[in-house]
Image: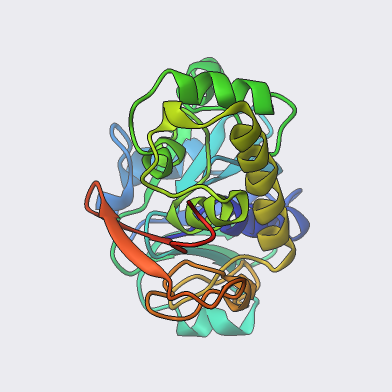
Length: 274
């Protein structure tokens, strides 16, 4: 499932490729991908003739900003890909849900095999509330070790689950939560409020480090994820615990364990994460 590094990589790629282009046409082969109250006709009318002024990311979502400050928000879901039609791998996309044609003949392609993604159009007046419903960005100045500690102390939920709550901190998914907890030496099942100030500071640093490293590696690809140029991520080669059940820990050689928390797998080293 694409998380912050994957969405950030796609947004950066699209920023180089589509900002300044004007939308000439819109096709929606799979209308169920549109968030209510959008429908294909309404989306075509709303986007036609408008210039793309910017491309960014909020949490795990890719955001295309139009010249009038409306925002096309693409939720990647589990298998979402966004790329333009002039990259070679675009020929392999077989589950296109939205096509946004540009004035130079290229097309922005939103492909989603499992169709858990969404596309919505957010008006400028609604954007502050939309964004405020999400937690702070973990790479922003607003996300500090002290604010993390304060949030953790208000919760008895397992710390891995706390990190996955997008209202508490935006963009972290299971892969990077497990990896950050390993680096901080904290077990995923620890109650959030049980972390000490020192552990919270270590976790804060680990979250930022692992996210930055994953962005430099252009994300993590197990199967579906591709960047906006059709390439695979490389961070899967650096994973210390995630999806490594039974394999030796790189630090101490003990087998990595998998536990299930809230119906989702968490991975940890029983010796390094006490």
